[in-house]
Image (tube, rainbow, N blue to C red; front, side, top):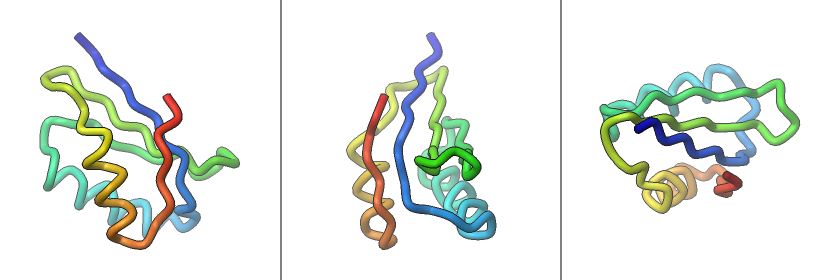
Length: 73
């Protein structure tokens, strides 16, 4: 079963987004992670087919890195 979670962020630089994606993949290797920085809400999209998505863990990690992150879907 495919699970998808969407977050609103304040990430606005592609280099930062790439670094966040790489680090999140190290922490959560079963996820597919990407950003849509062209969207006004700077969307972080997490997808998983193997496990539930740790929504609170993602938000907590993003906040620890100094970014805003709000679960929206």
